[in-house]
Length: 134
Image 1 (cartoon, rainbow, N blue to C red):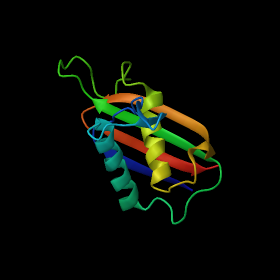
Image 2 (tube, rainbow, N blue to C red):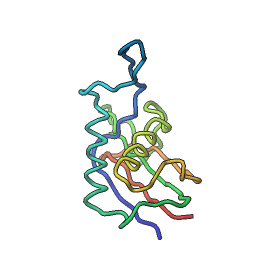
Image 3 (cartoon, rainbow, N blue to C red):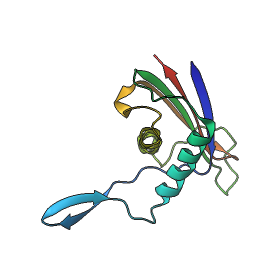
Image 4 (cartoon, helix red, strand yellow):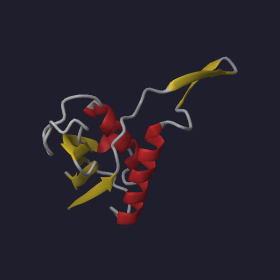
């Protein structure tokens, strides 16, 4: 069974963590004002609202995601043209998969066996993703 969800908002890539030293140990963290936190909150709210699955997925899955980034202000690029600049797709999907794990859609993102990703320009920014049990 495949369920598809669209999350509205400008997709933000997962940045690299910063490190602080506490008691002689390095600890990774993201600043509280990191823009990715707002994006992750929007994904989580939509996932909870849509009630993707009644219980956590614990079997292999296919994740398909299409990220729609805002059109440039120059107006030279048409809608649904492939997006070929930053942010990188791998960092965009990291943020999405982190939220799907913390929102308890699946037990762990290691269950993703098949990954299909696209990135386009669009007048309506966001991400459309679907999860299919393999």
